[in-house]
Length: 599
Image (tube, rainbow, N blue to C red; front, side, top):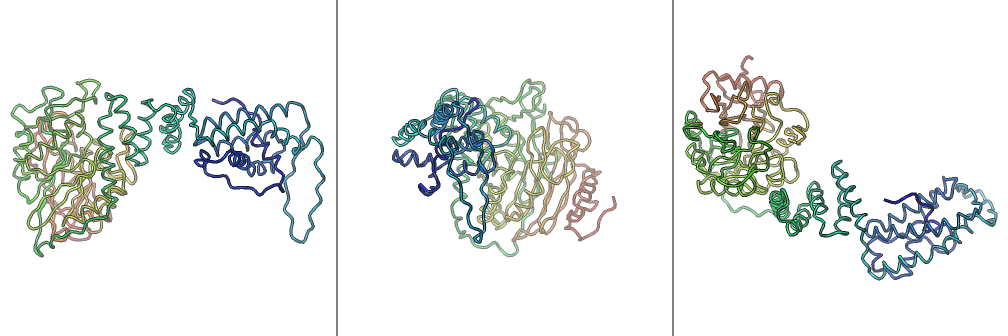
């Protein structure tokens, strides 16, 4: 922390330079100082402040006040970023020299602002400077500070490395952390980088710098610093997750930077079509807390709805939590109030038996038991022949009826394909479109619970988490080429919209969520969404098959169709112009086509 400063010697040096001595030079970029000759460095240091000093003096009545502000700012601007220690030392030394001159009590002339004159008005003759004016004072101060200037220039010219002291590094860390919390990532990166430069083995500086880079989507830089954290502190909390998402996102960025490969696949048959059925959240029981596995096995949770899931060319489900027999969670403060899910790997077979072909692992529970369980989930699905998407860059692919179908699953976290990074998300969808005939986008986003039935305009926040601007995201991925968009996450259903002819289901709600979910009211209503697409991905037919959950989460068909009535109301309220037309039997039609059921 620097105390009150007197006028800098750099400022006074600039004042001492008369307009006729030499033309002003633009200061060289800071990184050039390290190799500049001594004389050139001194000249650059002097000229760096001269323009701002003269500008400041044009409106200041106090030379000392103007010199302080202009000189300090100029010196720090030139040296501060690349050489903070040199800048600080030079300011201290220059200030001391200047204060010596000022302390003599020499009167300082008031500087009048210069007034521009037209070409027809002869210039007014200026009187010669009187003894004790700015020119004399500047000359004296310049001589007093010349040694400090030459010392700084010599150090810079000799290539010496200047880093903050440990105390300055701590101050930089604190400022960087404050900037990061206030979402000023540019400042955070500057301050934390200075801390790392001063103390390369300081783990907290590298850790927070990695997060600052991640906010800017500079994932390769995040990976660099978190890799160093791994060397310094292999057991650092959350390091495994951070490294995994940085590796994934950096690899995705590298992949998307390459030119897409032209597809050599022949076009699909002209009469090809595919019938897709999709369900929302599925969690068939969890080993934590204990006694939350169904007594009759995971298959009992969905036995009543198997025919609804199996009757399709392609069936999609969101796997709400890992399929894993290992791992540990750091998510829960107490087991009694813990919402960390882990289903046994054996439960994967129940997904297979239900006909699930495509699975999303992009959700807020997929990492509940760490990266080990993420990988175990993926290997379990692979062994069952279920294609999955979730981690950064992952795209699931199946072939049906002569059509290659891709599914890209997104979530509002960079540990998955990142919903909140629209540029990367749309680039990934475009890449998938180039390699598939039909592309399904799945997303896990939005607030949660009985009050989250509506799709708001703009961004949704939930307990401080950014859960996405879902209208903007869904429209963006359709613009990028997605043929149908399927949402889940709020644990309730939401309205259905057509955008540019593509169906967007904003949430399919809870489908089969055993033991740990509030299933009261709308949270106990589910659905199977059926969509038929032709060979070009155009919507040709659709319907909603109503379901509900009984007891602790047993999924069954709902003959009363309560969810259909709810969807009609939500769609009409949220999408009055673009909403799907939903008949009482659940049939879907595009806006403006077909009957509209009375509500």
